[in-house]
Image (tube, rainbow, N blue to C red; front, side, top):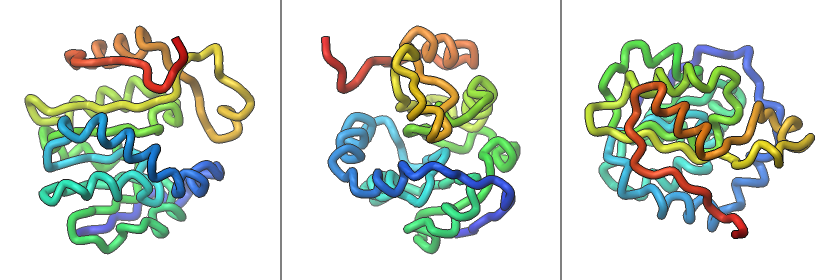
Length: 185
């Protein structure tokens, strides 16, 4: 697969990805909740070093374009030379201009909260998803819980279901499901 490098200036300073590399049960739990929606051609936005890519590869037919803007993480990807993973060192918006209607799914797993212009990211995702494809977003919830910790790891926000739904609908997505996970009622 091709491995692109476009953005050597972006450096992710957070340390949360190192600790998340051990969170196999957490990633498995997320994967089990979305696996039937993924299809075979997947754009993983903000793939980091591949903590979640590992789970996407459980589908033997999956082909993954793993977009990661941080050059250091891109080069340290566990799947840099994997035949079914195309590691792309760029913000997906920059490379995806030539990817219209290409993906069965576009996923943002704990990533959208790191993107300042989240509405632009969702609009670009709509453009690159095939008809009938899926946008899958997993984000931290409830803005009132936003803390110094969120800020320290590069989060711009947390989301309410109503906000996330409106964000997706404003980009022409039809909502199939939007729910809170792992919360106390």
